[in-house]
Image 1: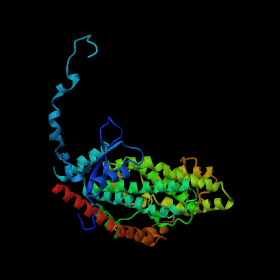
Image 2: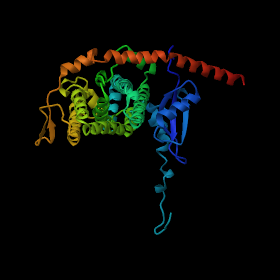
Image 3: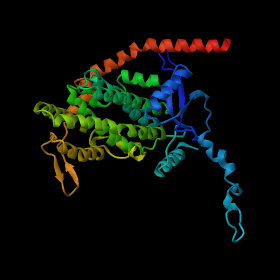
Length: 96
Length: 313
């Protein structure tokens, strides 16, 4: 961080209403967590976009590497028996 | 993978209309172009608060005042969405500000024109935000994920800005003859600079090639400008104002308006820093930043103290 700094960066997640998952909205700068929440509210929920907010220091996020996404996600590719369509249902069976 | 293969895969992804995300490989020129474009866009939103901020204490009614305050707050928000998108490309907020203050990064030249009276606030909302919307609607489909998401958010908020400006113009145009004359005068002064917001003609726009190939931009400067003209002429007619272009004429064959030539000498002159307000806008931004330094220092000191307290406890 440089001398006249703009505060650490925080990632902002919004839950648009209860029951729904939190969704990434963008980032804010703030000196501490309280300021991060207030800045996130002012920036990302000016039009009732949310009922709940998460702020997470950007540095704390661990992300997968897109270059490795092929091999990283590969194990899920070859297990088609995880899909319901893999199974042969007897002729005439209903509601299954 | 070597860079040729990576570039091929990158282009194929863009051709499939898949978004590029921050951690994906990208050509250095793509990154540079985006940083330049997004930061210019962000600075424009922030500097754009100045010509309107002048009128908060002079708005003609309480309604006009709260609306203007909300609009200016939105502009600050839009600037911050865009800084946030630019930062995903590996540039810091400090660097972005340094580039603005040092003159390396630009902002839209339209904000180097003064707002002389209340009618100008109407014209800015109607024309300047109107032109920005045409550009931003197109940019919702830009290939860079964070930029595209920022544009979607901005477009949702922006249409109120244009409508409030048009409402001011409509009210003045049906007011006293003096008020109507003020509205017409604002349109006369801001029409051409608004058309210049779309940038040079396609033939004179050297960076457009890659930007279109990489789908950073989805439509050319001239295409976007034409869209804006086609939309706005009818809006002027409805409120009884005249677009200050004697060559403006509906072209049955193309289905678009033909229009007169833009004064590009003026455009380049303002870009170079010789517009009516270049110096004032930048000086004000620097001063506001410097005068806010103690707030940042205090907040940092407080955060540090809280952190130390929590360690002791």
